[in-house]
Image (cartoon, rainbow, N blue to C red; front, top):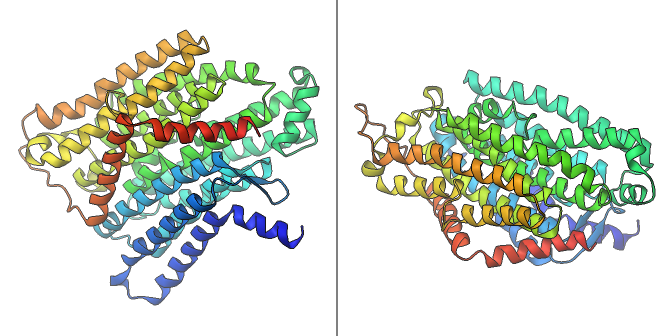
Length: 487
């Protein structure tokens, strides 16, 4: 590579470099300041994230093939970069107060969030299997540590151990699948795999089929698809709540970005074969996630199971196999990040401490005692349930519309029935807040700091505004999905 190519490649990873530098700065600052001033880490991290967001707006529309085709900056990657960075920014706002409450205000917490986000951005831009694997590992390892960050709680350590063991197992499947695909095609680039699939009878190639299956097993674990979802409830419940909120948004979006790019670029000729399998997985994921959530009395665990179901809804858009389905899936991933992080923020405020859990009983009478918190939680839950005029409704409408236009009537019916069932457990929390008598022992919300208040404001405005005025985000998603369909 000549100097010009190197500089162009570096231009493609400006957000990643900003986050990496910010993470290193936070670690250095942590060594130099007294312990009582460590809350400043969140502010430094937030400045870095905002700077990275501005860099996306400045450079993100230009298409750049970087590092000899190992990754690409394009509108598609820029869309998911925005999703990850917005999720990260909201998480940092929640973490400042939470870490003070729990006594875990440490610089490495914020550095791990930043480094994990770098892996997510790499995954979103990856155009080679090796880069996908690099991004996945850079994403996963900091998250394993963050899940078990509160070491004095057994549930945190237990969740981290389960997540690590199952994650390592799933990574083995993914890497073995990549090895088989390389053996079958002689290429690790997505375009090279597509070239092989276009001229060979891949359905008679055992190595190709086995490699493809194992590749999607690894992806299925990262996005909590059934039957690779068993780690999700324990990891989500045990992790510090801001980490849980981030896990439900950022890594899920990054993994789906990689899945979409792989489907569109590497397997365009194999779509019918793949989509039949994904049809079954989508139906199972929606159903198992919602049925499991129906019986939960712990709100944090309920939201963990519901996140599994939402991965199924996104998969409905991908099963459609066209631009409209991809556009709907991308829109839904963005708005899901807002409404889910918002819901976890309210749960965090109304918890009685990590050890005593997040029982639905804590929400009794909250709507009258603390009307603002009750109203905000209602907005997030209504949006998660897909009730108009929220962004969640618009997202599901476009997902199911894309499926209907492709003739996937049965899958659409399964999705609509699951969405209707989910309304029960979401509105159950609303019933506790507004229609049941207060607990004898009052649960006082934790103090709402500036960061938490700002995060709730951004999430609430986003959920409502994108439900009433979805056109701007839909247009961004449309141009993003077109950038890889036409590449």
